[in-house]
Length: 438
Image 1 (cartoon, rainbow, N blue to C red):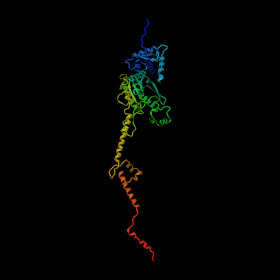
Image 2 (cartoon, one colour):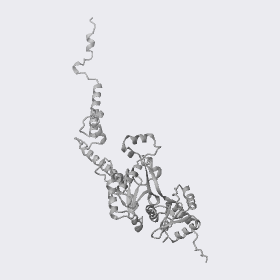
Image 3 (cartoon, rainbow, N blue to C red):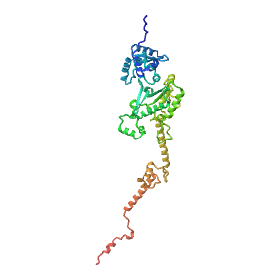
Image 4 (cartoon, rainbow, N blue to C red):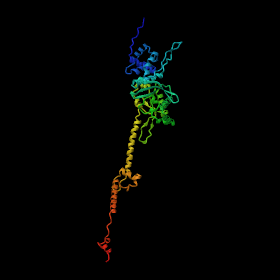
């Protein structure tokens, strides 16, 4: 008796593309993960499972294995991988490697089909972020390498680009009890070091500056550094933010790991004091050279959602939403406000001190004007300023009196003196002195 084929819902074009794109990026995924990566608005993954079966009929996907919890793990076939490449590569998105079917020649058992719990945790993290509206499936990338100056490549488990959610870029490291806390500190240090590198084509002047001393890179803007060639501005101070997501581990281990990250990695994530003329007035912190680091658990993401207050920023005591945790309310914006306020207060103080020192006229009691004050203190004018204890108007009166007296003196000097009476001769007297004698 022939078996009647089970009726399967035919997938529509967009749904088919969504599933192929998701599998092309993450390589392997369960229907539950694919549901959250493609159709998080649906109540369950039934439609996704129907579409996977349809894609299987078209030889585009296949079941690689069934987990102990009976969840199927789906991968692309060679044909599906080629179609996913056509969908992703024109968008500049790297396609994950094809998982080929290889069988043991003796037993016929499928080889290389073990389930990678770490890769599953990375995919689940992306799925929970997407479900919360933090990122689009085409904004995720896995195993992205960042090459350091010594040639070592530090890979990020997941890179998230979610500008619409206020997270232009987020590097994610997933830990499943497989790494020592100090290994995570090393990862943090490498991300920090990568954020301080210059691109190879940096101008010679900038290169020479950075080589001149170790901290010279801090005087080079982020827009001139290598990391900005890969990622957009974060919209916040600091380097590209980093998230540590812990999965399938104990609270005690998480607490211990975070404590080590905070203490041993402080140089890389902590803010600094601003170098200001008003140190007592500035409480703002300088985050420009730091890596913002947030931590959470996959279990919290799955239980409360990635959009909830489940993220804790290193150096802070409480959990916040992702954007609040990444924000710096005590950062540069506060610094500018405090600096402006301190500068205004300093100007007022100096003005009050100057006003208290302003001279007062000893004659009329009026305060000196700025112009007259300057006149009696500047060397080239002070020598001819006259009485320095009087104000401008009184000095003007003195000058007027002096000029009037000088004018009168000039007039008097120019007027002929009148002869005294005893020197005046009587009429005809001289004439008699020269009279001829007869």
